[in-house]
Image (cartoon, one colour):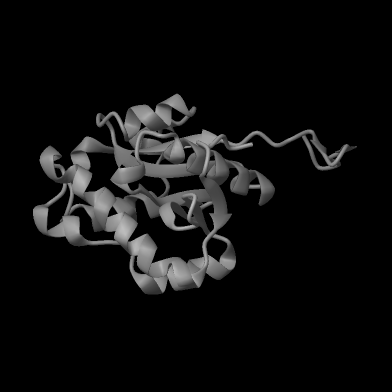
Length: 190
């Protein structure tokens, strides 16, 4: 379903993964240093351990693992508004450009579909090739400012002190619901 290079796997996160996920997040943040889009002091920030501790039992953390089973990337999601929100996606630079981010995003879309949510939303830098253009290649489209949900405006305000929010945008992709599950038609498909 989610094509990965040989030796990699996708799993749900486990509490024991938290130190590795923090290390992955910090390493991935370093990619933004030369862009000037994130305040230098904020580049050391990472998803807090307590957030991961709460999200993991809910199935809201998806992890890519290398051939040794070590976490080398992850996606953190949460239900917001009527859909699923991508809070964070990080792939360790040593494992970058192998399709792990794409596989994580396809897994996120599958989570939304499984939960019968209509869409996945995210915020990202509009122009960076591994941000806005990457998500656009997966079918995400920018949300016009007048259609942003209240939580999006709150997130933007929270990001403003550490990021150039004028260079950022919110994007959304509708989730296609499968017509069949295990060979039986879905009764709730409209």
